[in-house]
Length: 509
Image 1 (cartoon, rainbow, N blue to C red):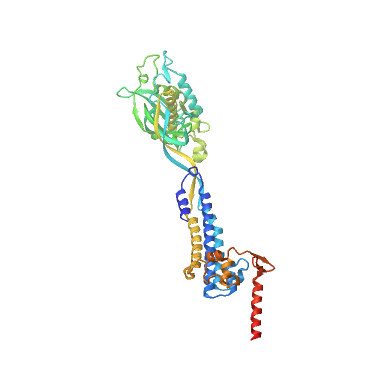
Image 2: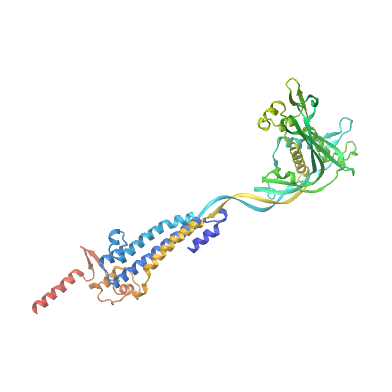
């Protein structure tokens, strides 16, 4: 019982792979040992009960059913006497206990799948600063100011297609499960502010007004440091009077070193988009290629590269078109992005607004900023070229098979076992009254009934003494009697001769 409890308690929440022999197998072995020990103890208790019952005085029927344990006739055994009844009921209870003990112990431990979380250290090839010229080159003509590089273009293509980002398939880079951490790399820092304006969509005088726009341009702050100015404008709400609320987000973007929240599964890397808006900025820096004084054919900085690509691919300028005949407003503009953020569902407007001026968009600001983060992260990985290795802490999560213990089944198994042990203890109680070791050996029982063959044995001899003196006697069961092979007589003949002598002596008298 102690070993079973130890196995179930120790194995709880332990991984299956850590156990060469499963707890269920060990419990099955221990259950077999317990059942064998219980059967042995019960057999000894039957012997004790038989001899104590005989010493206190009983019937042959009771002694028979005590030794038989009610196997052949349960009802007769129950009615044979109190001692026989105790043994029979104890035998039935112990049989039930032996039957349910193993299933209860097996149910006390189960295997379940659970996600394990451990701390780990990962490596990633990523640079903390993009070299000037990696994304673009300063142009040499009045009409073309920036020429995109092949590296920059392929990075934008990968962002547009959402290509899978992979790392090295070697130890330290590879994650067996899901690893989440933050790694430092070249990125951007931004500060955004928002304002709102009202625009009446029900009048023709506002026809051609901008109602959705995404625009970026390079600028400088008061100290002359360059920054990328991102402006988004969108109609965020329209009331039942067709007055739209124009939300204007203005973001000042600088080059910097940030901590990217990454998720690595096997050798696949993804950004955790839920945390991109709250990334830690380690530092900011000014690149010479982002300054307005950068000479022609010089390498462009990261901000100029962002402005070159995203100023083109995410540019939008959508205006209102008012139909005076239908008294209805629609929108027009060469921009796929505007269509992606437009709110077309009728449930988002009241009936009048939907029919006449249902022009509302979701904010594109977070999408644009996340797109820039994605570009910079991919660029930082490619620009490292396997020479800049970052080591970072990660939290690894992986599924594993664990043992889960159910202590209620363990308690039930112990309760039934303790019941059986108490019953055996109850039958064993008083064993000291016998004064010697006893068995249900036929020889010992024959001696107890003063069989003729056993009359040379001491009255209170144990089975060892009986075997020592009589164990070598050869016997044979023949025609219902036990024949002494050495003497060639039967106990039945000996008793007949004894009776004849008694009658002869009586006749003479």
